[in-house]
Amino acid sequence: MNMARVKVKLFANFREAAGVKEIELEGERVEDVLDSLVERFPQLGEMFYEGGTLRDYVHIMVNGRNVRGDLGYSLNDGDVVAIFPPVSGG
Image (cartoon, rainbow, N blue to C red; front, side, top):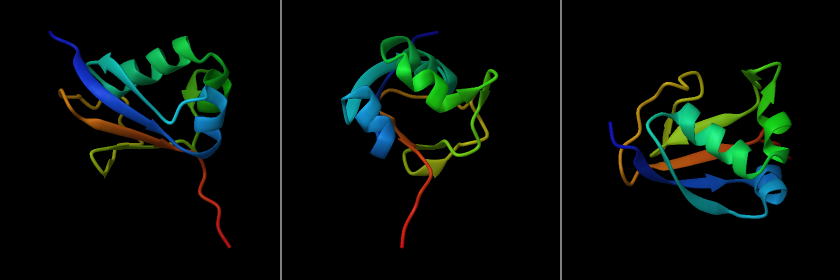
């Protein structure tokens, strides 16, 4: 199966940790994209995961659809994957 080429957008402290606001990566599933991000930016590993499990506060959207609980979500060429930390406001 061909890997999808997707645009990944990082927000807030994830963006600061990686030093980029968006990057193009390849992956078949959301999990592949997260793995590629952690490989490229190791500091994101402990921000995303705890004990091998995605932290509850990491929010993931694909083309505006919340796929937080579905790391196996299939990606297509041109998809936009947005990764948000906890939202705070006031």
